[in-house]
Length: 295
Image 1 (tube, rainbow, N blue to C red):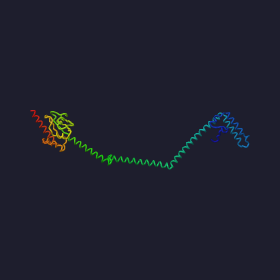
Image 2: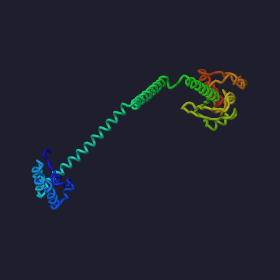
Image 3: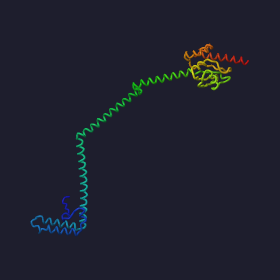
């Protein structure tokens, strides 16, 4: 502030917060001591002695008046607050400048230049690895998730499983017999069929299927020899005999064990489309025999 005068300093007193504690007596005593020192009569060789003495008198009059002193104290308080804010701002500015200079020094140092380059190289390398992984995944999808090596192994295992499965199904069918009988007359249960076919070997399972005109069953023998022995055999109750045929034709060697029983039946080689006609003829002949026996 232009022309600002600190009246406490003019009287040789402390300024600031300490000045608020000064009493009127202390201020008057300070004025008297300063007046003796600055009086023009005491300083004949000083051309500014009169002006300095008048300034001292003015400062004393301001501090002696209660209202004027209070206003002056408020002015000093505002100036102190402004100075504190300015000091804080200057401190922040100095810190910012110091941090900025530090970042600039670290940015232009050789070590800091190498770090971003290393980071960039690392990220680029990981990106390349990720791209290769994605390409490999799409390649597996396109080829059915199989590599050439694993494909051959899996194909071999698949063939082995399919071969084993096919032979198992073939074996089961060769041990299965199809049995049929008329719905009229004496019927057959699973227990009765098991009893009948136990003469040819062990019976593993019996499944019965019935319709309005005919009844049939699937007999599973324990061995192929038992199934061959029971093939094309007329058995069961005379009033409602059973007709037995293999579910699937067995190998020629399997029939050699039952050659004699097969020769006794002239129609034993009838399969396929001729089976139905043969079955109807046999059933008709058996019905006639049953009627003759009753009469």
